[in-house]
Image 1 (cartoon, rainbow, N blue to C red):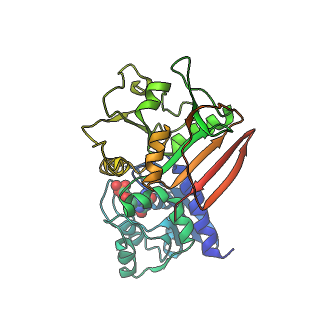
Image 2: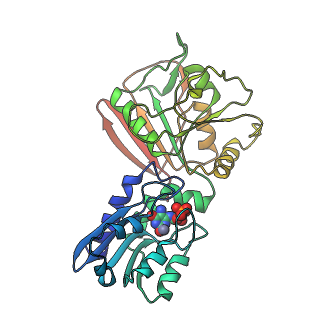
Image 3: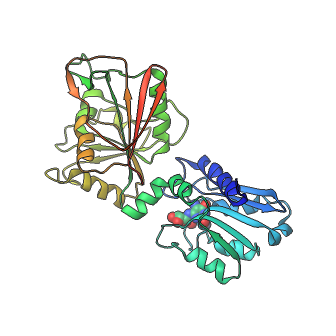
Length: 335
Ligand code: AOF
Ligand code: ZN
């Protein structure tokens, strides 16, 4: 592997440590190299806290080496005063002569301005190393800023015969289609997204908590559709373990373009990513509006014979996995 690619790849690896905790900020990693050796590393951990470059620079013991080093960063160093001061100024301040950047920041306040500042200061700037990987790393952040909507992940579990719920249920608790490993994986996924969304009927039928209780990490904001205000305040979605946004006919006009309106509402509320976990009607609405980036579909061993049919989805890029005896299909739409 070429030298720049090697270090940007390390930046990507470091950046991933922030998955789930940086919202609304992107995942960013940075590495500082002197004389063929890494002398500093850092990543962005949490919005409001230090950016990746700041952490990398702070981790260098002998600061006098900075003026002879190369700083690698997976995303363009920022140029604006946000919750923290500009990273490009810090790089200039330490006289780091070489800057290697994975990809350009789509955030309007930065968008090329960090690069401009660095070049104007006389730094030797290289742009576009592992660009595609760096864009993919921040698929949520890029979708939010470029498409003005959250990154949308659809998730459901269906039986061998294609049902997501049985016809009748004895009580208000979910009927499991998948095994415990798949269920835990879903909790991990929940910690990675900023929001989790479910439709009215799912909340009424299953009384789900919609939390990531089986995995350590971020609790996503619960977003629940409640067109006719049918959901009781006693439901688990109102417990104190996470924030809940209820979308009623006050926020959404349920008679048309529901998926579009939800996207707009979430964008206006700074929600960068959402995992939609049902029910069938809600999922199908997003599929029909072609407003989805990924679908993660489990197929369990169970048969229901009758009940609620699973959504119908097609996609060009399908990956298949086995989670013990469950099958997991991941459809990807992100380009
Ligand atoms: C960087 N390095 O590690 C990150 C950057 O409010 P602030 O000050 O945290 O700024 C947030 C914006 O800065 C964010 O929208 C994105 O454009 C950029 N994030 N930039 O140089 C980093 N996380
Ligand atoms: Zn910055």
